[in-house]
Image (cartoon, rainbow, N blue to C red; front, top):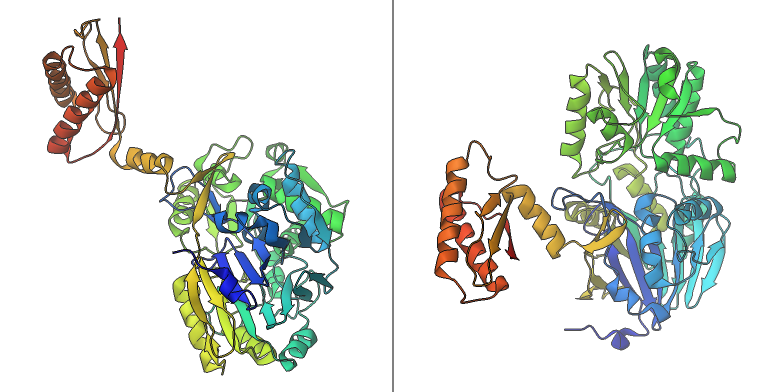
Amino acid sequence: MTFDFSKYKDELLFVPLGGSNEIGMNLNLYTIGGKWLMVDCGIGFANEHLPGVDIIVPDITFIAERKKDLLGLVLTHAHEDHLGAVPWLWRELGCPIYATPFTATFLHHKLSEMGPGTQPKVIEMKCGSSVQIGPFGVDMIELTHSIPEMQAVAITTECGVVMHTGDWKFDSNPLIGPVSNYAQLTKYGDGNVLAMVCDSTNVFVEGESGSEGEVRKHLSKVIADCKQRTVVTTFASNLARVATIIQAAHDAGKIVALAGRSLHRVVEAAKESGYLAKDIELVSDKDVMSLSRKDVLIMCTGCQGEPRAALSRIARGDHPNIKLQAGDTVIFSSRKIPGNESRINRMHNQLVEKKVEVITDKNDMIHVSGHPARDELKRMYEMVRPHIAVPTHGEPRHLQEHAKLAKSLGVKETVLAHNGAIVWLAKGEASVIGKVQSGYVAIDGSSMIPTDGDIIRTRRKLRDDGAVFVSVVLGKNSDLMAPVQMVAPGLLDIKEDDELIAECVDEITRVLGSSKAKSGDAQIAEQVRLCVRKLLKKELDKKPVIEVHVARV
């Protein structure tokens, strides 16, 4: 049943379309007075359920149908899971985009790769500035994170103020950018915040997330101790870490090479925005193999095991330029995002088999999270003091634990919102009151395809059960004019399973002999398909993809 938003026209509603069932792929909507405001528009990582797909984006059918009332998209920061879907989805939205200078610069670099037709109006806002977007007063509040210019968004409406935190942490030594604006957060807390929509990523982690300054000390020592070729992988958009790796390499007398398009993109944006020196010395990955092994550090993408990323290709041995040898070192200055463990472990094993040393944050303090641990969450709630807590940016277990923590800190109401939930933000009545269409769309190469469509279903079937291809040549009267041809890649071995293949061919020949001239090509193909499926189900308990080609002579 379609939800009637007109009944709540004068109320403040929150509708997440991404990031409230998973970590990443954040897309959040607010509505009041019939108008809509979007906060963030990010990508997520695909899993093995989507063969051949690296990333996914939210299904925005619901808000695309209301695009005339969508007043703007506010970006909290330049991480891919908060803005990476803009190049793919903006054509369906058409609204202005509000972003700070670095975030806008990074976005322009991404948009330039998508070609013409994806050039939205981007309105730059100074860090900590304010703007009125229809019925929404938007106040940017500086917070520390692993990328410059992270901004919480305080949204003021006639129904009250919502503190939308985005990603954040409290870091006393962030290296890039200022510390969090504690005074502004406290000021809003003193003014009676209606609701806080808050990051849940590290809600199970006790204490604090740690400082980037401490990482620099430890990572510098680890890199200095590497005597052969050194590879460091991290999240490309973690600019503070990128700067640390470059500095540590230079301190150790190593030349830095970049491998991976997203790393080049973030470095160029940082240079343009003044966060990295424009004359910083970097070499191409094409030139790196000609340099002495002990004198080079390669910074690359792929810390999550993405199949087409630079490190995955290096580990497999099919990178066009970079090869590793025994005695080289690969440093993972990152953490495993839930769901990516198997891909990362496979990559670790591939590297170890090459006798490459693998160093992770289990060996040394070479990574800290950009998200708040429990003590930081407690401090945030003490400052903001919201009436309602709405956990986001987490899997269901993270959201539930965050809600329990908020209650223990005296928050009067908590709401567990899943993607597509319609949340009524009203004192004493905060709750999920309906749902809208939500889901995921797969980025397949340069195309977008539904995650629940025939293409993905067929790929899973091909992967799990293989395929059978049958070719029959019939005459005008449907007489068989040549021997039946059958191959079954991924299912039957042409040598080992020759008897079963011959049995299938005999059965197909029998079916064709009994169906002469009684049907057209489509009907004959279906009879052949059914007979092959029945036989293979009986012999192998498999249901492969079966394609039958009928030719006439």
